[in-house]
Image 1 (cartoon, rainbow, N blue to C red):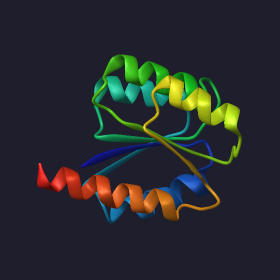
Image 2 (cartoon, helix red, strand yellow):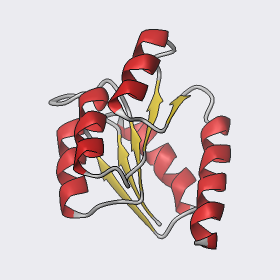
Image 3 (spheres, one colour):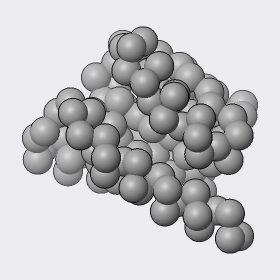
Image 4 (cartoon, rainbow, N blue to C red):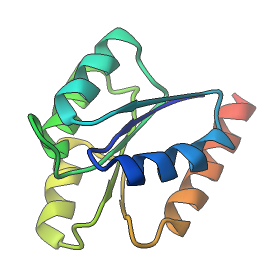
Length: 121
Protein backbone atom coordinates (compact mmCIF):
# COMPACT_ATOMS: atom_id res chain seq x y z
CA UNK A 1 0.00 0.00 0.00
CA UNK A 2 1.37 3.43 -0.97
CA UNK A 3 0.34 6.48 1.07
CA UNK A 4 1.01 10.11 0.23
CA UNK A 5 1.20 12.57 3.14
CA UNK A 6 0.59 16.21 2.18
CA UNK A 7 1.49 18.32 5.21
CA UNK A 8 3.46 21.58 5.46
CA UNK A 9 4.54 21.12 9.10
CA UNK A 10 7.60 18.86 9.07
CA UNK A 11 7.05 17.69 12.67
CA UNK A 12 3.47 16.62 11.98
CA UNK A 13 4.56 15.05 8.69
CA UNK A 14 7.24 13.02 10.51
CA UNK A 15 4.72 11.85 13.14
CA UNK A 16 2.25 10.79 10.44
CA UNK A 17 5.03 9.06 8.52
CA UNK A 18 5.94 7.01 11.60
CA UNK A 19 2.26 6.03 12.06
CA UNK A 20 1.98 4.97 8.42
CA UNK A 21 5.16 2.89 8.31
CA UNK A 22 3.44 0.20 10.37
CA UNK A 23 0.60 -0.10 7.86
CA UNK A 24 2.08 0.26 4.44
CA UNK A 25 4.97 -0.51 2.15
CA UNK A 26 5.62 2.96 0.81
CA UNK A 27 5.14 6.41 2.36
CA UNK A 28 5.64 9.48 0.17
CA UNK A 29 5.74 12.97 1.67
CA UNK A 30 5.18 16.44 0.29
CA UNK A 31 4.68 19.91 1.78
CA UNK A 32 1.81 21.44 -0.20
CA UNK A 33 -1.30 20.70 -2.24
CA UNK A 34 0.23 21.44 -5.63
CA UNK A 35 3.02 18.95 -5.02
CA UNK A 36 0.45 16.40 -3.80
CA UNK A 37 -1.55 16.78 -7.01
CA UNK A 38 1.60 16.47 -9.13
CA UNK A 39 2.73 13.35 -7.27
CA UNK A 40 -0.72 11.77 -7.68
CA UNK A 41 -0.42 12.24 -11.43
CA UNK A 42 3.09 10.73 -11.57
CA UNK A 43 2.90 8.01 -8.89
CA UNK A 44 -0.75 7.35 -7.97
CA UNK A 45 -0.96 6.38 -4.28
CA UNK A 46 -3.53 4.10 -2.69
CA UNK A 47 -4.43 6.86 -0.20
CA UNK A 48 -3.68 10.54 0.42
CA UNK A 49 -3.54 12.12 3.88
CA UNK A 50 -4.15 15.81 3.25
CA UNK A 51 -3.77 18.88 5.45
CA UNK A 52 -5.98 21.87 4.61
CA UNK A 53 -3.82 24.94 5.27
CA UNK A 54 -0.75 24.69 3.05
CA UNK A 55 1.18 27.01 0.74
CA UNK A 56 0.72 27.20 -3.05
CA UNK A 57 -2.49 25.13 -3.06
CA UNK A 58 -4.68 24.36 -0.06
CA UNK A 59 -5.87 20.87 0.74
CA UNK A 60 -9.47 21.47 -0.34
CA UNK A 61 -8.45 22.47 -3.86
CA UNK A 62 -5.84 19.69 -4.03
CA UNK A 63 -8.50 17.17 -2.97
CA UNK A 64 -10.85 18.43 -5.67
CA UNK A 65 -8.15 18.10 -8.33
CA UNK A 66 -6.96 14.68 -7.17
CA UNK A 67 -10.52 13.32 -7.14
CA UNK A 68 -11.08 14.73 -10.66
CA UNK A 69 -7.87 13.00 -11.73
CA UNK A 70 -8.94 9.64 -10.27
CA UNK A 71 -11.98 8.55 -8.29
CA UNK A 72 -9.89 5.56 -7.13
CA UNK A 73 -7.58 7.63 -4.92
CA UNK A 74 -9.23 8.28 -1.55
CA UNK A 75 -8.24 11.53 0.14
CA UNK A 76 -8.49 11.79 3.92
CA UNK A 77 -8.30 15.25 5.45
CA UNK A 78 -6.10 15.53 8.57
CA UNK A 79 -6.29 19.07 9.92
CA UNK A 80 -6.42 21.36 12.93
CA UNK A 81 -9.62 23.01 11.65
CA UNK A 82 -12.50 21.82 13.84
CA UNK A 83 -15.05 23.69 11.79
CA UNK A 84 -18.24 22.60 10.00
CA UNK A 85 -17.55 24.86 7.01
CA UNK A 86 -14.19 23.17 6.40
CA UNK A 87 -15.74 19.71 6.87
CA UNK A 88 -18.46 20.49 4.38
CA UNK A 89 -16.02 21.96 1.84
CA UNK A 90 -13.73 18.92 2.20
CA UNK A 91 -16.56 16.45 1.69
CA UNK A 92 -17.87 18.41 -1.31
CA UNK A 93 -14.36 18.33 -2.78
CA UNK A 94 -14.44 14.53 -2.53
CA UNK A 95 -12.69 13.75 0.77
CA UNK A 96 -13.40 10.26 2.08
CA UNK A 97 -13.02 11.27 5.74
CA UNK A 98 -12.06 14.18 8.00
CA UNK A 99 -9.88 13.84 11.12
CA UNK A 100 -8.42 16.34 13.56
CA UNK A 101 -4.68 16.39 14.26
CA UNK A 102 -5.19 16.67 18.01
CA UNK A 103 -6.84 13.22 18.13
CA UNK A 104 -5.36 10.82 15.61
CA UNK A 105 -6.85 7.70 17.20
CA UNK A 106 -9.83 7.85 14.82
CA UNK A 107 -7.46 8.10 11.87
CA UNK A 108 -5.52 5.05 13.09
CA UNK A 109 -8.74 3.02 13.34
CA UNK A 110 -9.85 4.17 9.89
CA UNK A 111 -6.47 3.24 8.37
CA UNK A 112 -6.39 -0.18 10.03
CA UNK A 113 -9.82 -0.96 8.56
CA UNK A 114 -8.74 0.29 5.14
CA UNK A 115 -5.53 -1.75 5.33
CA UNK A 116 -7.47 -4.90 6.26
CA UNK A 117 -9.84 -4.36 3.32
CA UNK A 118 -6.91 -3.82 0.95
CA UNK A 119 -5.17 -6.97 2.21
CA UNK A 120 -8.31 -9.04 1.55
CA UNK A 121 -8.53 -7.82 -2.05
